[in-house]
Image 1 (cartoon, rainbow, N blue to C red):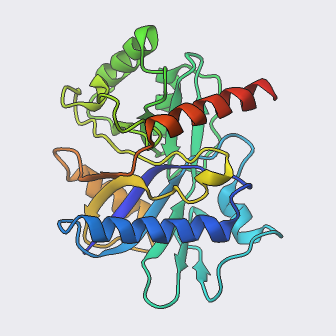
Image 2 (image 1 turned 60 degrees about the vertical axis):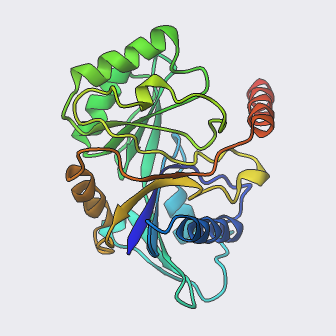
Length: 269
């Protein structure tokens, strides 16, 4: 028995909740079926990384356009920090936990996961790490195309070195093409207790609606559904090496197409 955690999830309105959640179940079933060592996945946990001005959980709970698949049960644990969804027919439960995506002055990202506090964009990476730590967040510096190079790579290395044993982690990204070499900061030469906590990072395009839970990591046992965030922290605190990682990666063609679409989208805003 185990549970799957996707540590970098965005919900975009273009997805629609029904299609998004059906994709989560499909990816969870794939993980359970492809790797016998994982065992039966009873719960999939999605760690949301909302940009400023977005509250995906509020939209799911209260949005007038929300349409869950038929016969799904929704409850809110953890004093509103999360949502637990129970599909019918014994399918794995889905937990969504609130979180923030922060953009720093170095044009890097920091994920403040299982966090409901408002932390502004525009801080330096080290200040954003400290502010997110004060808010009790699980903190992940995610890989991004072109972001871990030259001076920005040195910034990430410096921050990881200056904040060892502090619960700061790095995260591989499901959008990284499968044939690309593993970035050095995701390899074994990392300082302190830094773990690789990957996530799918769905992009704001309709064909990414079913990507959540396609990339993540596996934890043994089953979470406490009354306090799933605490369950993740306890499990991570017991690890001395990276948890088992599962990833369905983009093909080189899909990766290039995604990057071009993101460039065009940025130019149009």
